[in-house]
Length: 251
Image (cartoon, rainbow, N blue to C red; front, side):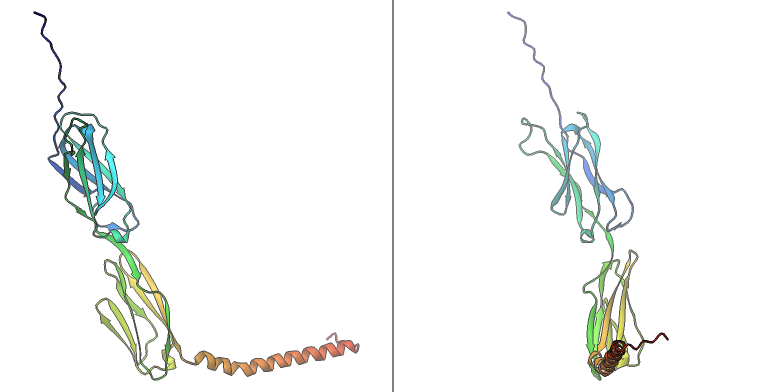
């Protein structure tokens, strides 16, 4: 009878995380254009070196973190993600998912555990839906124009203009509306809209131009301009003629 056959078996037990959670390292809301870090805490997982952490924004994969710490006993693992949020990231859902990749002898689908979503609150400066515009005033006609902006937090809208007895300012929702009744030349000019919140401020201008004002000014100055040109031409011809006759003045 031969000696007994002894073979050593290597057994590794895997354990899916008890909990996976996402949080921000900085307190409070984020500001568009600034840099922040999110962390994913994975509690009581083994083996750690078989762990991959996937980061998502909504349904988009942002980054995969492969854990390299060798440990076959359950332990806590942390992964981090650096982001620079845009205004479009407001209310986006960030989450992480832990995956255990156990090789060809492991389960066909890797065991996973996902965090609850982290809802991003992103503050951003106001932005107008339209830029500077010019509107034509018709004498004795009414004209209306408005101003609104989007931002987080909601911006305060303010008009800056020259007051007039036939001008009224009203508010509808987030819009500030100016109505000019029976317009006169006194209403022509610049109307500046300012949108402000804690992140920043922006301005846009509405220019009111009285109909026919430009053409009437041109008609008024045209005869004067022609007269000046005629005088200059006449003076030049006179001087030129005197020089040809040998007449010079040193005064």
